[in-house]
Length: 610
Image 1: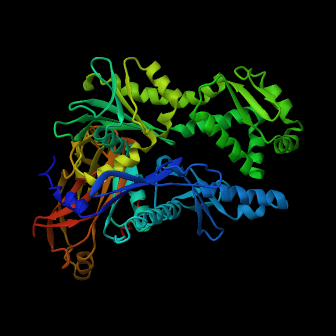
Image 2: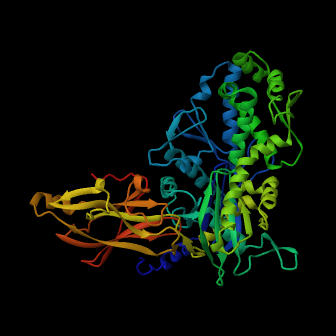
Image 3: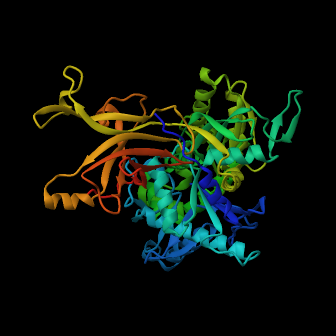
């Protein structure tokens, strides 16, 4: 049960004292920042990224970073792509392959946080050559670079601000991310020097932007289409289709113009990157995986050119014939070395495969028909449609058919058409800038932290405890003997149930007693030792026991520090999970002294009990 609600005005006041709200949208494929001043919150300033081969500056840059052999920062975004390609080209010209290999080039590494089940602070990620570095270091370096870019851009128009106290930082995270991934991003932000940082869920940020601004095409009752705000009482699905994931929530516009979530966040790895991986598999089907592996190792710069060409075709795909320029000479070299053949022969052979009949080589261009590109999109689109249908077919929601599409992948006309075609009765709403909705909405959330009033718990949460063993009911494997009595360990103490409505400031507690051993030296040591409690999570609504066998996994640990004078011989405490905007926090209320102590909630298994 929830205790009385904590007043969240403190959070609102904390946000209001800042002169600037700056948001970072750290994406899987593209990253950018935006900010606005408290005096004019809707006047958004966005990042401008350039490169030698970029004709017009863009609001977002590719999420890639180049580090030197000693792991220091060299470049990010377009500049990182260009410098790394130059290193590879220099190696090719000199006949050496060792120089570029000494550098670290990471791209699209955000997905590692979603894919890693047991994420920890020391988790490592691999660069394009397979060399590893701590993920925390790589994320921190990138966030620090973006921070410096924000400072530089602000100083061009406003030089008198205090970097430490005048900026409220916002970092966006997918709603479907684990608690550990969210905590990891907060840790990286703190390591990068973002002191005042709040996490905002990406679908919520996009939703805030779209309902507050006149940026969406809304269908009126008379059938007309207008650019307007969302009306009061409107319920809609927000689908954030990014490079890595499809992240879905269901929101409702309240009478006070705030939002509430009415269906728990759902999603999976059905972003635009899935299309890119299918295209790479298509190349492997033509030339063989061994050829592509060696080609990538020897001519990674040329593979990057092919991937970039496909990225351009993917965004605007709507033609019956697609052409991709191939580096014939270099491909022939690798194919001859592996297969003893050439490009033309292998393409001709592949054209005999069912579904590949349209394949043809014209000069240095690989040409193929519409069905092959459609095949690259198929798994991602089908995955997205299944997620949307799961919501639209939920009778408890009353048949919601408004669908707000945001995120870079949603800009694809092919994706939009397939959703409208395959989901009966859906009304697709697209903002004027789908790829910037999350970024600008995060700034909006920074100025108005109370805009999202309710959320739905994605999981069941609780603690673990021991109680007298119940014969014939409790599993024998959980029986232990203490002081001559049988106890059942690992009993789940539920605090939050999957599907519960959660409000910021709600807190869920469990009473516990802490006693000190009367032995002199041991009592002295334990008096200053913190208390620990394990936090468990389940996809089930009512698990009875904790542990993998019972589908109730250990996800974190609570650490409660002792009072300044140490623990008394008997302490009666209430340990609580506290609901935040995007994360949980913990605290302990000492009923002996009626004092409240903030604890640490460790989802990254970084705190030692010893």
